[in-house]
Amino acid sequence: MGGDNAPEVVIEGIVLARDKLPQVDYLLYGNEQILKPLLDKHGTARKVCEIRHTDDVVSNDEKPGIALRSGRNSSMRLAINAVGQGEAAGVVSAGNTGALMAMAKFVLKTLPGIDRPAIASFFPTMRGESLMLDLGANVVCNSDNLVQFAVMGEVFARNVFHIKQPSIGILNIGSEELKGHDSVKQTFNILQNIDLPIRFHGFVEGDDIAKGTVDVIVTDGFTGNIALKTAEGTARMFGSFLKDALHSTPISMAGGLLAKPALNKLRMRLDPSRYNGAMFLGLNGICVKSHGGTDALGFSNALGVAAELVNDGLNDVIKEDLSHLDTEEPGANKTS
Image (cartoon, rainbow, N blue to C red; front, side, top):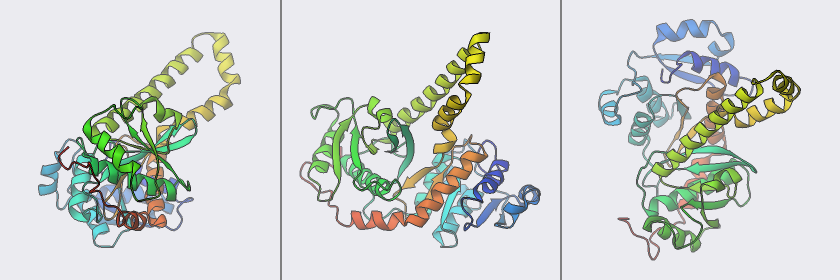
């Protein structure tokens, strides 16, 4: 029931996902009087969906602490409970991000060796795709948190991107070792000497994100969220400028028609819905956050992300790598 266009976009997303995810069934938590007529319009969705009725919904502006205390019967909480109780393999929501993180962390707990879960998502780059984490779950991070993010990101890139030895970079204000605050410097030292087969690149800057300099970019949630929103805003601005330019004169309109196949290819490459589905890595269960304003295609992609994480057994691999990790390296500072 969460998101700007819910629940219609959820049902339509399930319809679109049927061909790619024929093995997936869905538990829908929400108001049955609203959901049932929508399912009746889509026979393919009705066959794979079961409605679990609840009137309670977490609003988009509800504070996480209040949602955690008062939303025990909300659609969001009941969906997360289904994962915690083993009834569902994963949860996908387009609702309140803070509430989803708070509830998921409370119900599912974190994996052994993880202090804080991180929000991770894909970025289109000149070389393909990269993964960035954290994108907003943790405003302040110490070196232990960042090292854990690096391990989780490396496991993700290896198992989902199928990169044999993904490269890891720490987002910083410069590539030189002397730049940055204490937390990133300490993380740099730990990853240089870590007893895991991690291919550590070093520090990367903001322009390295689009270049695809590394496969995994590690940062705190404050910086990561600003980078994400900046990239989304830049993509929208570029699209608006291009549209205006192609409609400015009859000649440019004719050129736009000739270039339409190439422009459609570009639009698909930069379409945010293709990258919809941010993962809460570090939880003892699969939880995926869809953008609140997504369309049906975007929500279907978020469902695909969740299914892929389940099929790849990502959490088991993360647990295995973390079992070999000792973040008590020389120079690590728990209070930084």
